[in-house]
Length: 346
Ligand SMILES: [Cu+2]
Image 1 (cartoon, helix red, strand yellow):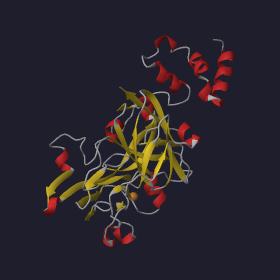
Image 2 (cartoon, helix red, strand yellow):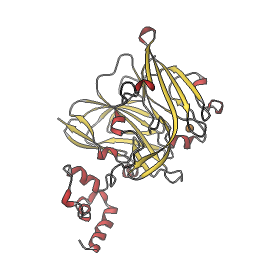
Image 3 (cartoon, helix red, strand yellow):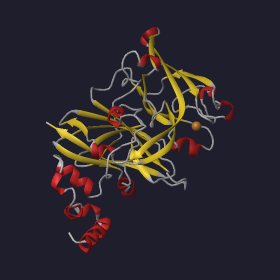
Image 4 (cartoon, protein in one colour):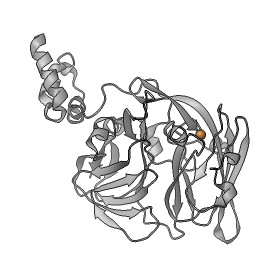
């Protein structure tokens, strides 16, 4: 292709990424002779729905594993006990004990884009905590960072467990033990509450906290999604948006589900700087249980909007096999990384 035609195509594609699949693949004439087997998805990517390239540097956990991991269930036996232990209490309750540590760590948030994160246990989002209503939760938190940090939980707890007053900030090298009952039922979150708060949150110190009802919810394929973003140039605006940290990760690694099976999504918005975030799924509708606190759905829809710290449980069944997008319905966020795919099989 001559360079003038290529430049014209690329200019047109920059303005109309969604409409330029054929033009875009022509523009990438070096690679057309080696199209990967899943050409359809890759045509999405070359059309602008996704990054060019794959994670190389890493520094974070496996984000497909993250979707279905709670209470350190991703760790092999022997390793897991260093971070999580459960002991029976009276009346069927469990004591759930966790080890959390804060550590500064560079993580990759888009191919080749490394972010100097502040993390719980070396991962963003932090480890998911999950308990049954009434269980006792005890978290031993060690600050291995270089400034004061805390863990502030959403949910009931006494004042001294709130982690928000400067007198409760955990200094570098020090340890604090948070302890409270799992209450109320729902999908909640935790985050650092040190000052300045915007910085301590958007740098990566947050995670999901789920409280199950005593009578368990119906069996389902359960997925954890935290909508987040990253300010890579410190201008108090996000340059990269995602669900679960890495831009377009689930475009490259579609989430596998079965047609007609119940899919339950624990959705949390922790996005800093922007007023609102949203979740939209293509071609299907879901029941929404806002905050997950009530047993009846509060909405039946294909799009939800959440302010920071708002969250919802979404339950849906895919009626059709195939590939279906899910993304922020704030188009800017979708184009900057908050975009994924479900792959539905029979
Ligand atoms: Cu902090």
